[in-house]
Length: 308
Ligand SMILES: Cc1cc2nc3c(=O)[nH]c(=O)nc-3n(C[C@H](O)[C@H](O)[C@H](O)COP(=O)(O)OP(=O)(O)OC[C@H]3O[C@@H](n4cnc5c(N)ncnc54)[C@H](O)[C@@H]3O)c2cc1C
Image (cartoon, rainbow, N blue to C red; front, side):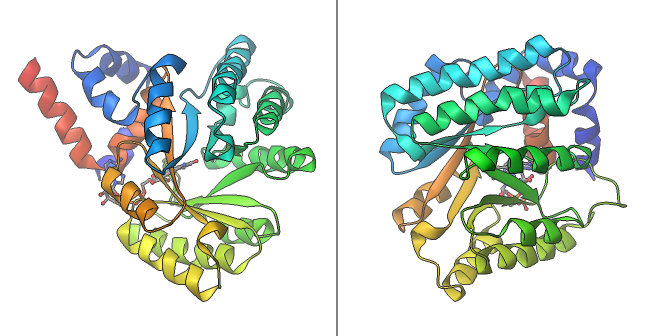
């Protein structure tokens, strides 16, 4: 019940100011967003890759309001890619981007987001890696998929995300499960109305399995974005049934959540990619992590009371 309330708060400027200024916030945020700058994050990249993990990097930020902010988002990713070039990790470290951070919601936003994200995809390809377009709320998805299709003409390895909670997703999965495509399947993290999305956990889980089966039986490269132990076991079974080898799909989880499981899956020989977010505009990302697990919110509130 708390999830939708927290997700509504994630869009409130007043809550943003309140929570960002709370003295204990930073130490709770650090669990999910382990740095603010590229220099903070490079040691983490080195550490995780040395442990056999792969990464997808997210410079946090979304819903920007000016073209200058969109250009700054592009430049932040380009600076990250410059650092990655020196590390020579190739596709072991890819990028995840939110198109709303590249200007998608501004006037002329579709073209602006495409123009801003293209140089990032080009720079990623030049160092042997790639970019995945995150899925945001359902109103943004037609534009996201169109940008994905456009980018794939020159950079076919560009990935995208689909969300099991949306009714449209089975059809999207069928379209995307084609040779060479990289698709991350997640449950979905936004507050969506009952007209477009399943609301009950068991319905979302069942939809996840239906969509996963489409991806596993298809010709693309499925990326299983979930921490749910049941779905991870089902994914392994479906991969086995589809005759996929361990390098023909991968698991993805968020930094700070079920870290032991990251290492266990990697040690079993699976490709395991950790979605690692960093930067200063962490509010929206952080609030979605609180909404996913109310115990996180209780911990956060308890820390505020005990330190306050
Ligand atoms: C790599 C990756 C990329 C993602 N990209 C997107 C995206 O582009 N668009 C989008 O809408 N959503 C995205 N998500 C978020 C996703 O939609 C879910 O909200 C999130 O993964 C929680 O669902 P779950 O599958 O882990 O299952 P759940 O049933 O929510 O969780 C299963 C178990 O995992 C643990 N867990 C899950 N979340 C948390 C948490 N926040 N804190 C602590 N423990 C937790 C708990 O032990 C829980 O019991 C992404 C998730 C991952 C892993």
